[in-house]
Image (cartoon, rainbow, N blue to C red; front, side, top):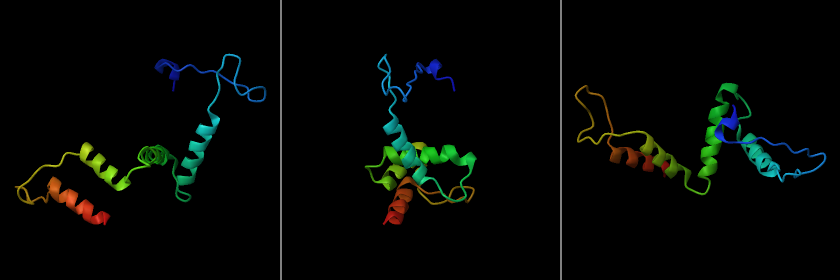
Length: 114
């Protein structure tokens, strides 16, 4: 990925000589390495597949962002935000397909959380 197209400027620091170069640039190694260590600790130890790495990273990022919140409630909020549920008067439509109203769905999720 060419980050310069997005306004990022790549500078280097030779850590064998200095931790902040003459221009004042530095790396935030402790923070990056700390996040990477946390991420690796949460990766599955068996059955890990390379094609799922972006999903593992997305899950880690989501959990990290919501780490001080009730993850179940945040998950339900995200489902509600990203999926549209129809309000229905009955539990089936003209094709006899079973559908669930917002209220029924939220009640079932809340019951499952208990």
